[in-house]
Length: 271
Picture 1: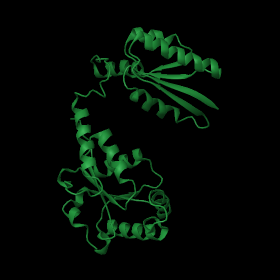
Picture 2: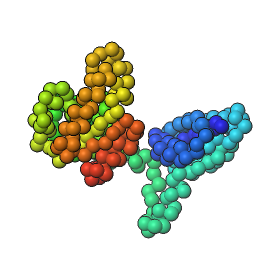
Picture 3: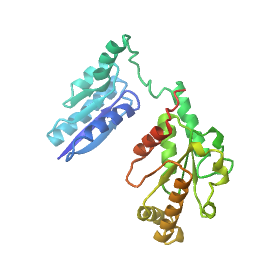
Picture 4: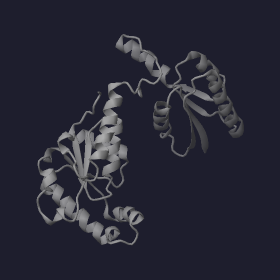
């Protein structure tokens, strides 16, 4: 079974897409073709959106699912004339929220992604920090880190740091444990002062070998034996120094980030 889902917004469409995809993921056995229509902020663009939705409805013989976060009521009336099954995300939640909070909403476009908001600047600053403190880069400043991810190379540290920065404004650095680091039973000198900020990522050696093989085919770095040795020694190091850690093999970056936030009790920055 295959259906088409539209995410229509007068902004970026990220909010509609995020919530819409989360809801549609609950329908196993249904394959969805996703179409994002951002910046539908004029009557002409709204009519173009209706034309695309109706064309898909005619092609498929099924009503497309349409998640929208459009604010302007004029544009909403145009969109409502389509043959799509409409789900207005903001109206669904804002009215009950206004009642619960006892205050009206601003009901304005782009509040979540406003480049003048404190949250936006906190996220951008955190991304810059993650990039400057990636893979034990020279001059890394761990004193400003909320968390420092440690583990073997290619265990998922960098994408986890970037995700933590972009979504939560968390200052996340990462440090790859190398063969030189494993010559000692102690933590690497660069990390010793910040043991309370460490969080380890480990990975199944067979999966690690597959990932490294794509990066450096036929190398010792990618051999299963090398991967097994590194993972075994790093896990022993993490246990020896009581560093909390998890196996990232079957986890998405969202799941990894959530576990890190919970374990280290990080709340992220709001500005």
